[in-house]
Picture 1 (cartoon, helix red, strand yellow):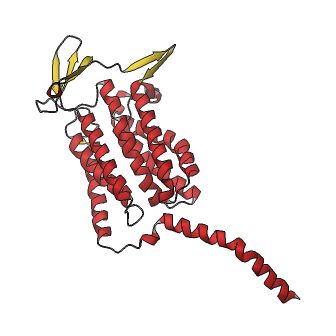
Picture 2 (tube, one colour):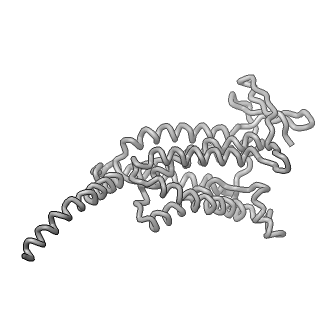
Length: 297
């Protein structure tokens, strides 16, 4: 068990708690940070929803329906590749409060949920995915700090400038790559980049592809440094998935960059035109009725 966390290059040494109590309740800081990340992502989506042609109510409905499904997928993804931990007692798969979530499972579950929501609500999926992917980066950036408080998801031993020291209860300190920090910073940089690019997007789905390429590239690199990866044989599952998704998204982005795109084809402009046409119909209605009445006379 680790106690003190230190960053010697910056003169930092702290021993933060991983949980706190309120009466009989034990509240884990990891869960608090995930909740904060989710709330900030939703607030951001609400604020910019009109720029993508999405209604705030649809965002709210999506959060209420998709988040539980995404958590379930994050749990299933982890358990499938760590089945030896649960084989003797399969019911323990349900013990989610004991930890064991995989972010890639959550992202895949959220993407599937978004597509289903779009079918039900008759929303253009690439447009909503553009907005949601920006929210993903916010949530991932903040949520990764839960690993800091839990003293987990760190990388291999290192003596690099950014090394993080973990001190055991016996006073022994070992220095590791703070991979949770690498990923948090990478997600923050990706969010800032894609936030500004989203204001000049040329087609629906461009930002979502950018997210997959950006996060996939960073995760493929960072996963190679971690010591707690999920494996399929000798392959790190998340690293392979990240590399393939990055390559695929990059190729699609390159292909689309060579094509001409009409900005008016963006879903937000389609919604605006539909609203304008709907607003004109009542104006034309009475005139059309008078003409029909005159013809009847």
